[in-house]
Length: 500
Image (cartoon, rainbow, N blue to C red; front, side):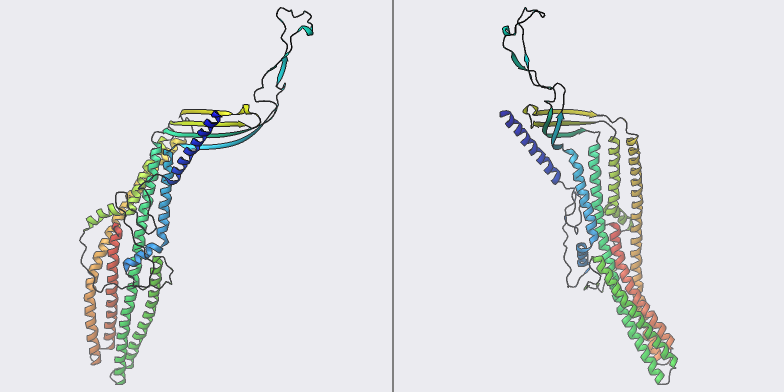
């Protein structure tokens, strides 16, 4: 009974150890190498403090650009895609880290065996003759001592027939040494997580820039519609002037028809712009991640925009992009991952050292003589000898992947610098365009007023008035487009440098 209690305590301790190891694998060690808690949060590297982002719901209030971005980060499913991928990479890292722990397996087996040996087994009668009696001498059976029954023992495997066994086994194994392959695998998984987190950050910036561009495009369409309403008023004024002069007999009917044609054409353009406003509203709703028919009450841009040049020069912006662009950091993480994969491939095919332990309990249901314990422990050094050139080709594959990742990193860096260059000079062009657009609008307004006054006095022709009115319409549209291009290019610089 003491032996059975001792073995029972061994099994209880073994199962407790198994439970602890399993719990560690399920929860994983506490680590800063995690992902954002929600899809609307930006991932921060371990060396930076974590910043929480407010995610409000869609409201009926007047929404500015900041509120629209918050809505997009809450509702747009694109952020949830990269967030889920980052979470999957985090779990993958924890799974790879499980190689730091020993592996423990338990097995319970029920076996039935049938034996059939010739001669059988069991007891027998052994007659022991007295000493000094020859073999050929007649022996009186009545003079012999009582026969003695002894057990000749059982054959190996037990008696003929069926034997039932239940075995319980707990085995443990731990990798002691493998030429750095285990640590390289963990490093590779860690870089995969870093890459997924950086891509999540870039995706958040992509959602933000898409919202801003859609927002500015919608305001541009609305402003263009307002300008065309002013054009319609001017065309109506031209038509009234031509009609009055025609009725007075001063001008011909051709002037009235030309003015009326311009009036109708302006109405046609307004209808097209109204459709554009609806389209841009749907694009904005789509960028927010809400249905296209969602009504949005959007605030306008300020009337006065700070049209000063940015303080940073192009070289400073390029250096900022090198350190702040999340997707460029993702490519750097990809390159480091490939380097770690190369270390893993180089460790494959080399010897590795493991420690193994096993505890097995066997219980015979038919006979207790078949019951007992088996203990074993070993330290094994394994040498892979030949696997059909598998390991050498894996190393070559890993080296090629490192070279490809390095080339992709160089290409990405060049593309990033080109984006910064384009956005910078696009902003410079927008600033100058807006300044000239203001002057253009000022002069075209004066020209139109002078042409209309001269026409009413009978000096100018209707063509002079219509030409001046068309120029004024272009000036109104140009200043609206230049304002829109300015705000888009300014956001583009922040997006290109990774600071949006």
